Length: 261
Image (cartoon, rainbow, N blue to C red; front, top):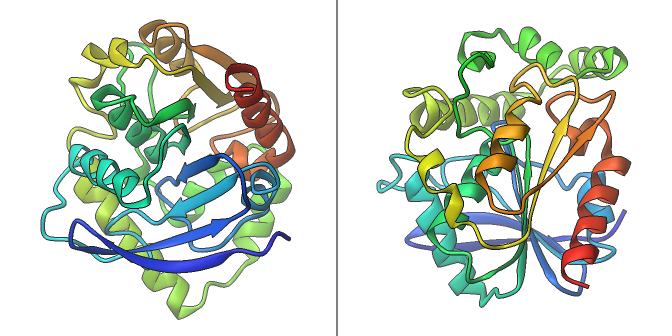
């Protein structure tokens, strides 16, 4: 696996854990509700082509919980500060689930620093007739069974006995998720009005068998974001970067090469 380094950066008064690896054009991965506690194989694969930044959002994992954090908009402005902190320009921004919603919130505010945008099964919208799963009502086992399509992966995850430290991180992540997305449930009722402001090339990527947010939501993001490209990965649930890592990295790198050669 590609070597990575871990640093803690104080941005907007928040001590933030960041993993970095690779060289080349910058790519930032914004994680979902389960956090980003470890440097995963898909991150290493992306680091073969890019300088990869993987922050833990304020309030998650090893990052502090700042007093100013109340909603997803606060996180979007925080990341604007982070881009300035690192001097990031021509950035390829990739976000999944909560991180995909966050990436869209960042882009509607300012696409200036972005060279491309990849939204992977993002939350953030509500579509009449397409029911999302209420993740706050699921038990830990039910959550795992909903996240993955491949039952072999489900059983492997459920067979793992978490350490006390892992349990503490999970509880911390669940607490901040409730603060960010409890009401309204995992969406911003105003986001749909402003997605037309996204001017950077955008990929919308979804698992065909997503049981958390149905793949039909991808069509709505594609409709609302000018020129957005929609791709579906078959035999895949809500976490393409984990369940279909090879297809995920191929779609992301292929899209970036297509729009920013």
